[in-house]
Length: 199
Image (cartoon, rainbow, N blue to C red; front, side, top):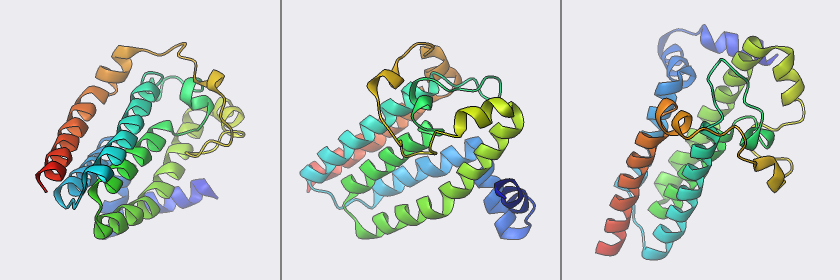
């Protein structure tokens, strides 16, 4: 069922086809999310309290992404330890925390509505696509691992699942690009902080 739906979405033409190609491309998917962070910063109506709390949540989200990215060897090895013992898509969980944090920091109703719509429209199909792709690559290994692991909201949480065995700094920050993403998020966070303290 999921594979058929993803296949149908991948075959659409026109504006919906373009939307699918952006949504299913790993780099373009990241770019859209990062642009949304800039929108949060641009249209912010923050106060110091919302900025401090929101940016703290965003920092937690990016730290979680950095941690998760250190386990990923894209399309070569199935990541199933560390944060991947909690959820199938910990990078998406990190994205959710980052955008939730920036949305809270922005304190703008229209930004909040836009981010909610983005998550409702963007992520269900992206998750279905990723699951289908990983199942095609890793087959029974993926099916055995994923059957008890939720997509982005952990069903259970144990600190022991987050052990760092197998985590690689270079893999996370350089190969999987978390260093430039972190610097970009830092600049957007500073932008919001300056705006909040200028009001």
